[in-house]
Length: 153
Image (cartoon, rainbow, N blue to C red):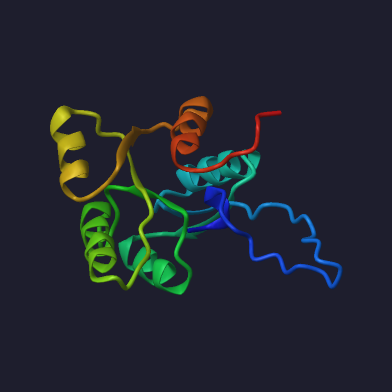
């Protein structure tokens, strides 16, 4: 399990037997979003929350980013060119079931808030469904369910 989730940080004991204290690793969130304005807002929110963020502009980039370094959480836009968020989530979950990716939560990001939209997100394997435009407090509350975030300033 990851240090961001409050687990062993791999600190090596010193010759006198003491383990030096290390700052916990920042949680890594992969933002999958094709809209520039939404990217800027979400990345700023994540930075203010003390979260390390990576950006993928579509599902294809997201698959590659997760294969490169598995995130602690994915914020997944639903409608994107190339590969949409629903298909990307299905593929990520298939890789996790196959054991080629560790488990991590996937949170849908979309302007669509109808019951059918929420159901489609859940059926694709997402853990939660957030609506845009993003609200800082709502996003922080949702992320706090899945990650160890520092106390707000």
